[in-house]
Length: 364
Image (cartoon, rainbow, N blue to C red; front, side, top):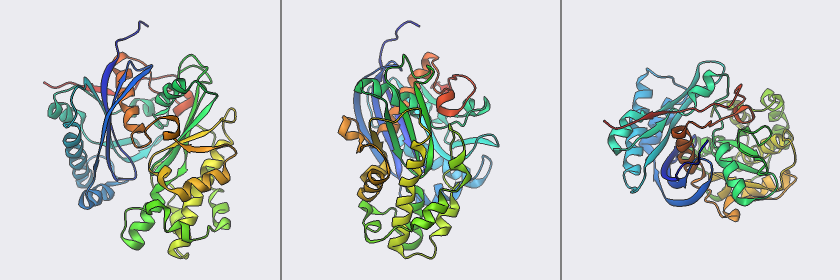
């Protein structure tokens, strides 16, 4: 395929932690990352979070989903309209339900409406084609992680995203491309911030355990964590993916613990899930680079370093922006969709063959 001219793409991500929308610009041809542009964050208000939370687990057609879609679309339009110079937008939407092999996957938000609001072509609905072809539909950032690994030019490296759910990408930068056999291996590791955030909201009325302050006061219940690791998910071969609330039993299991011990146990469980995931990799990574909100939790980072067999560092240590990695990924993927390049492969989602997801909506 002929080399394409790099374009400035604008990507957006609203994750399962429900904290808000990240947006970032990227100069890319969908294969190489040439430059990083401006970025911004638009938090969800507490009422908006309540609307989104009420729609979790719902499929299209309910009043809760319609309300969540309106919140998602308005927040994205407000944030993305602040940017200048973008030629293309990657819009992930807000995941409300994810059931690969069953009902499919559902991200709230209509790319047609966003294209009209922004006056730009919008690539969206990235996951549905992958799921229809037998894939998990997640994670989708690995092809972008491979491009970042190429920039590092290092040995195999793991990119670990610690959002509501944890997911990792093992990337070998010596491979020709992300869809080459053995180039990329990716899967969800288990719950990350979501159970901690839910605990804080339910018990203390707070959004999160800021800086791990509550968990730092507690002790992890290792017996409970051992039982958590007996969940069938950890014995499934990768690739594999999770719904945000797939581990509701973990949250129920800490009900009898004090606030501090519950927070520490959930934090340690997230790290233990990552450690279990590393045993599935093709080869040991040279390091684990963490993105997402979890990298800002020193207790979670400490647990990871204690439980993993290699150094664990925030992606900033490699020169990347951990707050914007996933938003940048959807800018990158939008360009790949526009060029007709694959966005997932057997090693990332378990799809039968490399496939390009996403549809493109253009303003009238």
